[in-house]
Length: 279
Image (cartoon, rainbow, N blue to C red; front, top):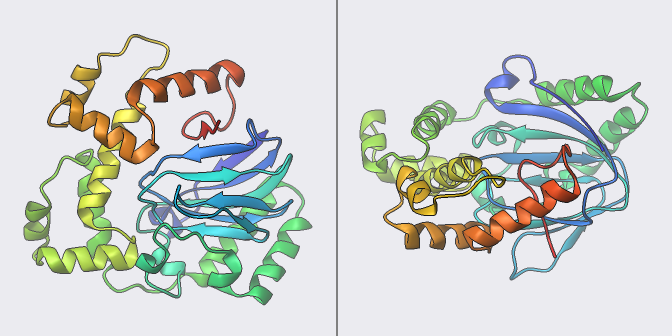
């Protein structure tokens, strides 16, 4: 599978981690993606894919692509036998300037790109991408589309700054202190977060702490679960295990087994950093 990515130029770099092109056969037809502190936009150029936003909802098919605000639970992504797409990994607040609705309306409810940008505009964009001269030209076209759609967003500076503090602390920050430092009430801060990210500051902090903990795990080495939980700021190992199941549906030890399977069956794969095979 080919994966090409780059950071966009300013001012998009303050909203986006990377633009990417993905093409080829996926490692597994069905992948589970634990929640992460990011949002996602995919413009699909191949066969439709399927997404299930949680165990309590039905999978839905997406032909033109999808928009996913920061999730609060693991979601499943069903790939066709070969896939081709371009996409955007947004910072938690980065999708807001491109949405016509509050992010909270899309929380754990992936929608098609057409539902956000309209059918004619998306059809024209997909036509331009499909006839581009290669991945780098495709990413330039996507970047130009995003620059055209970028609009001023009230409260973005506040949310961006507070989110940066949460990220820098690895999620270990008191939300009351955060709002006090920003000079706003906790209620106001939570409202702005839900409007622009889709979740509260507390939820964003939990997600940052979880992802930082997961990335600290070396599946090829012995793991001191108690020490890992303590270093991440969890009350105890039971609290740590509860969070793990809440975010992934797996126990910590089962998570490592699944991660080891991915690394064993697809060493060095472009997608080996976060998704998990779904049995």
